[in-house]
Length: 422
Image (cartoon, rainbow, N blue to C red):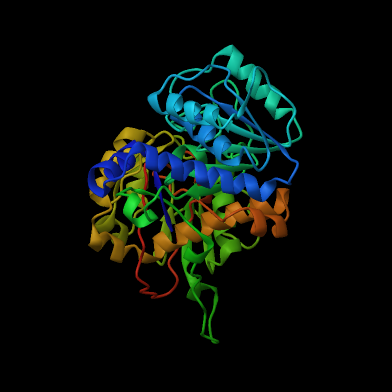
């Protein structure tokens, strides 16, 4: 499990204030990491073009060009000039080493995008959009410095986006590069060390990246069993039945012993799913919210609760939003989700009570991502080139069809709770 941050400027500041480092030292480390990646991809006669912006992201690229200038055919393209103090300083150093500066995009074997970093908030100019689109049509290997230009701080795409083969992100992982809109542009993501260990650099966050090593599947040792021995998931199917049926099928495919579909309507379901108009009393976990619409009223849902649920959840349905008060809160509002999660994540009792559910969230969503990789890229390529990753989102309106939680028997494995309002 790796930490992910909304912004890292505060982490940089910590390095200055607490560790005695300065902006120049951190930039040299960033440029070194960028240079190492270029060296891995470049041959002796390779042509390398750095496309640099006016700020510190551009300064990282200028510094890296300086480091590589005597080993490869390196050129600098500065379409907007330089403005920040560090970019001016790095350009001065590059000039002393006679690094070539070109006036337009030239052909190269490797292109390094250093136009804008992870703090992008404004719209891209038409000139920059044209440069990005030109670069995306070229055949050379493409590396993004910190984050591909065009992805803003929230992970949205600003008109156009540089499509990188590899992204060298500085200091720590950023939320923006894992957004749904950004994932087709980042390529393989690597983190550059900025002169201190990741543990020292990183701070507190409520967002994490799950890795393959975090997936600890339960083992089944019993021989005399039936399907009910391995958890009973009840999925309430609402107005838009597809999401609920997909969730139920996913729970079954992943290993839940018994899966029941709860609906007022008599839907056709696969033979391996059970149907019911009420929630079975032996349900270990109840899943609801996916495509719920207004199929059930609050009163109907509460009537369907068994006594166990009444002591644990007090919920309210509002169209396709699911809000759960007391110990769990899901919301579509990003800001509120972050604020609420700060308190929820500290509830040790809640973690202990919901060990199985949390583990199941991780493994089922992880399985969806693996299925996606296998279908479109091939299992071998997925294992070699992509790290199995996942955001634990505090919203149920995105990929909610995959949020299936179930409890395996009486397992009391310690839970690692990961919650994020994204």
